[in-house]
Amino acid sequence: MSPQHLRQYALRSMQSATLLRSLASSSFAGRISHHAPATSTMIPTWSRRAMTHEASFKAPLHEAQNVFPPLKEFDLRGRVFVVTGGGRGLGLSMAEALMEAGGKVWCLDRLEEPDDEFLRVQSRASQGFDGSLHYDRIDVRDAKAMESTISRIAADKSRLDGLIAAAGIQQVQAALDYSVEDIQKMLDINYTGVFMTATTVAREMMKYKTRGSILLVASMSGLIANKGLVSPVYNSSKAAVIQLGRNLAMEWGKVREDGSGGIRVNSLCPGHIVTPMVRENFEKEPWLKEMWEKENMLGRLSSPEEFRGAALYILSDASTFMTGTSFIIDGGHTAW
Image (cartoon, rainbow, N blue to C red; front, side, top):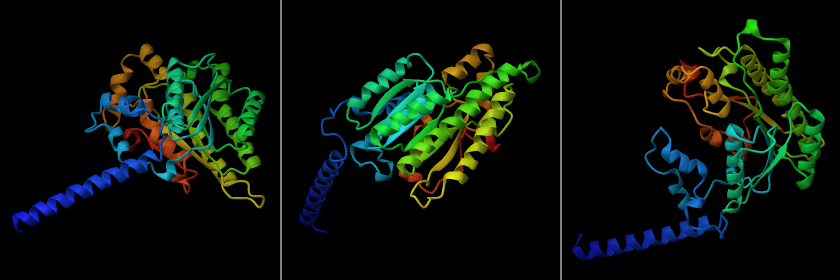
């Protein structure tokens, strides 16, 4: 090829690249709020945290967002969600993901006031995201209050699209030392609370004929006996939640003659997560952290942010043929 032809070829390539960048930029701009400032506030929380995570990523995850439009399957604009245990920790992290995807998210928790992190996340809703984050104080053991609250949330938009049931407690105690009262408290929150929340949400989904998705937060502890963690009632309660998910998926999956139904139900089985509840375990048993890190294939513990993608996947149209499944994300802990 002659030098003149090479120059012409290079010029055409540069022009094509400029056009593609322009099209990509305009296409993406049409998919997000045009009021969003071109600053670091547009970088989702999980991207900023991933940069400093102990598992060093090769490149900032948010860079691709400046080029590619989001997949339509993950678009939650106009949809309404409830997240129990959403005042802090894992529940809040997953609620944030739904909010960033455009969902109107109600976080329910027994905390008198949500964690400071909740207020920070809530303030981000106006920074280029179409979603919103709200808080109501409620104890999942209060079935009547739960029914009233969820009914009000669904009535506001005449729909309820999804639930993440993440409320739960832990108690490290040997089986021989458990009292009937302690057992009952654990099961009331970790199992009965999940059961009543799921059925209350399902009734609203049936009422408004929304083919929603329900995610029950269980644990890998419902699948195994955790080495070094003496928590027989907690583990049993999480095993019950996994089985509950299968049964509810069977009951609510088919679309009925009146158009109701079509509800998907799955459970999430996380490995060890560094949450406020787990930090309390470390305060009592400092040696647990090092031992747990050795128990999975990645050699570290997880953070709540690492479950955002799973929550968005299960609560969105990206998983419309997924139901009755236990989603295990444990760093390979149960795969040994």
